[in-house]
Length: 318
Image 1: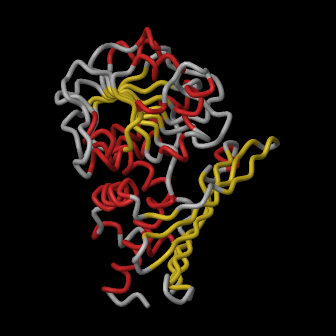
Image 2: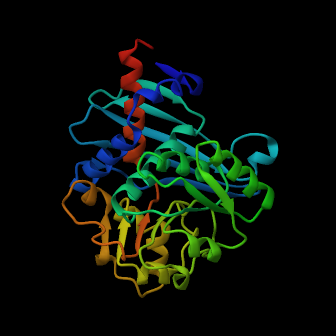
Image 3: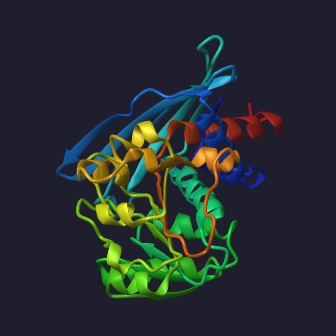
């Protein structure tokens, strides 16, 4: 089976993407998932990175191999910064089951769904304003999927480029949000108690002294070693630090940066799947500061690829 993005997008309405990703995190934290280290390539001119992720659930039906890239100058060429595809194989025979020519869209969606899972379990009970740091595809997708887990319909956006900020807020407004922009990340932090960072920054954008009690931060952008959106002091000062997968976050993401500072104890870290599965408590009160470090795990790719494949089979897209 070969499915193009135009075919895939018509199948997504029949899939509970957030639920599928949550179930994947649960299985991973239970120890049922096999995920080798991430393969990656980074490029300087033009700037970009390529991730190769793969994995399977023990006793499951399929395994996934995913290639996804982000080339950040692509919008200037009129094409998306995200590109890629997913391959789903029969776990018992190695036979190729489906080629998902998703053009990187499924990676964007599963990443946004992971942000929704983190917010569902870690955000304060009353969310005033949602702050989104960044103005790219993921900024828009995070807003889209947060609609599934929060009643807040107010979004504040920060980005370095004024035109990009305005375009991003216009797109998010079309999702049913009241939107506004700010000139600094510090100002965004002052107004928002659910913050999502979605940039490829290599220097921290958020400082600990800007974070008010009761704030949750989901850090999305630091998916490659060398990227960092949060100052290490943010994690040191948080009441709860959550990883999508601790073994991966030791090598990349905000937890890796905090560990490199020499002051952060990884024993404080809880895996998101353990909270989803009820094995570990998440946020216990609305005054806590919580941080989720989401580096993107292959179980997310398996879950969304398998869900698309099952729906396609069910409606005879073979």
